[in-house]
Length: 112
Length: 204
Image 1 (cartoon, rainbow over the protein chains, first blue to last red):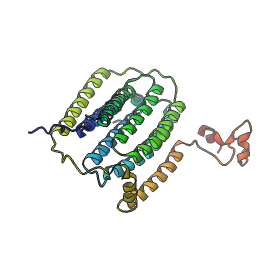
Image 2: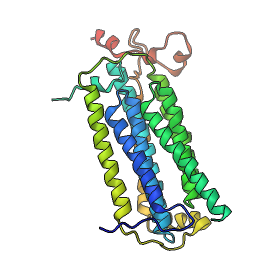
Image 3: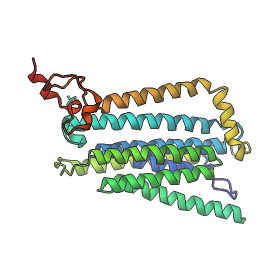
Image 4: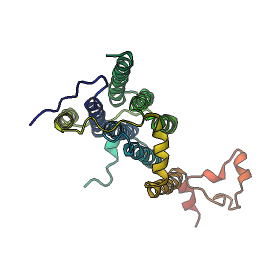
């Protein structure tokens, strides 16, 4: 196993962006698991989507500089994330009208 | 190290620290309104990182869509469901937090190891820089035309679905008097269009 360390250039290396996106993704996963408030769960999903977008943009800039397909993918991910946020918050409002709470632990109607 | 690269490095460090601290604050702060505003800060710093990555169009899209639309939508949802409720204690919550923290740390270690051991094909092609917007337009109207059109259909479906899911039950007739309800009645003090469902079950 050979470590491919960041090349000693002047610019910020690719690995720095990857590690930053990994931090963002892991914080999002932890928040997704541990949040009691349903709105915070949606926020954690947005954090994870942003981490993936950051990865796509970093790869697009460093490895695919001419055909920037990563940026096109990031635009589609932003579109789908906007649709997801709208539908998710509508479901949240509907849940709140029916159960009078936003506690994730009490949304257990379908739990074995 | 030239001035330009030093500026880039300083911008990256500032944006990265804002991003990490903001995301941790989004997850950990007890007040969810502060979390929502910090989420806007996280989105803005991600847009700044996009600018560092030669992607001005996507940075603008990020600011418009995430900060302008998604964050405002989340704030409105918080306003609509903002009822102070003390969450009931759950046995084993601390254990669950620690376990999930370990899982996330393991995932992070795995991702960092992949990032540092993969032989990336660096240095890649020279980035196009400010021509990125032109290239994106060419992509969207040539080889990514079908996903582009499907995205518009998806947005339409999401809009209709959100309206259907979030609206209240609307009746075309007044359920108390039985007379057909028109839009003008909304202006009066009693609003027949927004009656709750149990009132409907009294009528045979």
